[in-house]
Image 1 (cartoon, rainbow, N blue to C red):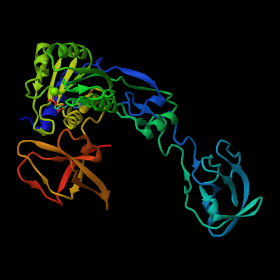
Image 2: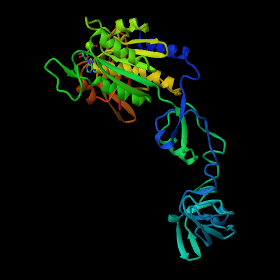
Image 3: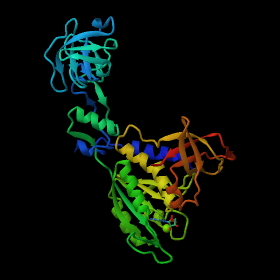
Image 4: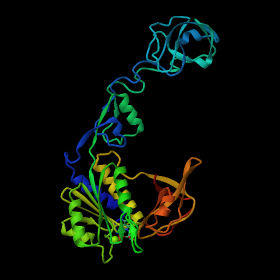
Length: 404
Ligand code: AMP
Ligand code: MG
């Protein structure tokens, strides 16, 4: 059976071989809508930052040469406030009152914070502590020079980036357009969330988790509802789904008598590249493509679907978005309880992770298998247990994926 890494390699190599310059178009969005989108411009600083020598303390702009012996009384020759620079030059024996964010007056070379001063009269102040040159201020261009690259194309726009874009006058931002992802749930047992299941039925939860994962990854979900375990119904929905950039079908891909999805994929000429992965949960994961569309069949069990999405679909979406990082973010923790390995399949086990004493600690969470959303929702991570014999012992390191 195909290891997870090999499966992911196949998905990515298909995506790379089919990459077209026009395939992932860009769009311009208002800055306020750009959080978590993938930037498609190299952004250069539009000015020196800060644009002038700037006080970073409230206090007095001084010449350090005047502070040879402390305390010393200096005469106050002006006030520089944020948004209103003082039109003075600080000469020997003088200083200028200054506020955080205000331009440093000519002649001065440090700012003494107000806490280290004592007002003697309206026009003079006693400096109680010395400062070094450039203390209490930031020189023009210290953060970035005009024209310097501050954000690279491919970056997923984070909170700080949003502020940086705002500070550089970008009221609109060029980002990747969102790929469209059709989502089909399958199963005769499924009813919609609004309905009350009969004794042999359950509610369709996968459409919700998958659509949410699609959105989180940066794509646009189109939920096509529930297809019954019936060839005609599957054909109708899959035909519709093949119009999108990516089609995800959940359920119906295992070896059961009514698992008909792969048969319908074949009828439509989907070229299937794998339909099993050495992964627990998530073994019957199917990947293929047809025309311009990438096609996934994800196992129906709720945890299996989510895990398979995270391992294979999310990296593909990020690649299509031209994101610089596509791989799942893997962290490392010390095991607080042993975890049994499986020589057949790598396992992703719901777990509880905590940060303590400078490192992560992790232990498997109680859960009842790949349908147990109760167990998964009480967990906050997935331990990645390698495919091999034996056991990972307490105290050993293990890799994990954080689930927020
Ligand atoms: P399947 O892969 O179709 O054999 O389904 C495996 C298990 O997942 C069965 O117990 C299904 O009832 C369950 N399942 C399939 N699709 C969904 C869904 N959309 N929401 C919740 N559970 C599902
Ligand atoms: Mg089914």
